[in-house]
Amino acid sequence: MSGVRPTRPDRPRRSLPASLTYLIAARLVLNTAHRVVYPFLPAISRGLGISLEQGGLLLSAKAGAGVATPLVVATAGRGEGRRRTMAAGLALFVIGAAVTAASGVYAGALVGFALFGLAKPVFDIAGQAYVADRTPYRRRGRYLALFETTWALALLVGAPATGWLIARLGWRAPFWVAAGLALAALAFLSRMVDRDERPPPGTPVPRLRFSRSAVLILAAVFALMFAAEVSFVVFGAWLEDRFGLSLVALGGAATAIAVAELVGEGASFAFTDRLGPRRSVSLGLALCIAAFACLGPASGSLAGGLAVIVLAFLGFEFAIVSALPLATEVAPEARTRFLAILVVALSASRAAAVALGPILFSWGGFAANSTASAIAGALAMGLVLGVREQGQASPPPQSLPL
Image 1 (cartoon, rainbow, N blue to C red):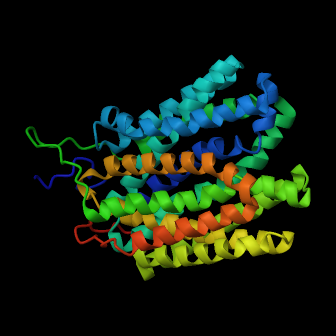
Image 2: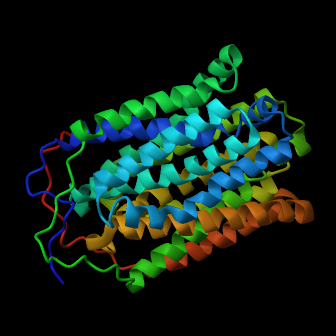
């Protein structure tokens, strides 16, 4: 098999710090639209004239659309085209946001949310692969951790901005703003990201091979995401049913989790490269498992329960972000395609957790969910310990001030 990597130019024309700044800004727009629809779903549902249950189907459409990510990567990105794939993701997002806002009807919102659900992972995996192409394995964790801070920032920064826009201009305003910002990002893409290099004529397309480590990572990430989602999906119900918290208080609790996520991402930036990705994932999982195991007994106390669940999500975020360097190197010749398969695993995990979480909560309360989370986390730990770290063939680093 040829060693040519068509998307890694020998002399990148853009500096990585500049490209990374652009990628973080663009992804913050996409992540904000992805995350704020959860707390503002009642307002969006009222604006569309539908019930909250019907509004929940919008989220289902968004989550389910991610399964088509490998198809988009194989067509729009032609397998491993980073910039083409990013362009496809941004274009899908602009169309989805515009359709949702312009139509103002339920059918249009369903189409728009499905496009959101497809656009975000398409852009994400191309950005992750782009960063991985240009950083050595031993230093990759910190750059990917910076890229992942957009998860927490979307809730900490994007949610207040979205609430302000809805209160003053109506539920459609955030979608118009998001469409405009994404369109601007699309316009600047060619200036901020290196073009995809074409391989010499006759060069075969590298095959995506599923090694033992690749399979273990897919299974581990599935279990890890399930551990977090099966408890988070009933987090609000637990606080309302057990303690009668108001919407404002629920928002404060969600902010606490966002801060925990940001701390976890910061910890990954600081420690993943020093400790090694596999060891970092294991440490994050150890904290996550211990916290979820303690959450059942602590769930009777508001302060104690919140403190423990914050620790659980801190450990989860540290683990999931630290897992990215592992995932980017198990199939280095087909990074984007492997990350697209990873998106399918994450989507399937979320779907399973969303379906099972309410059933567990109705059967055994929040303790049942937290127990399931601890068991899934322990399974993820066992799988991660079987992964063999790669990274011997990573590209030389650029001069980076980090």
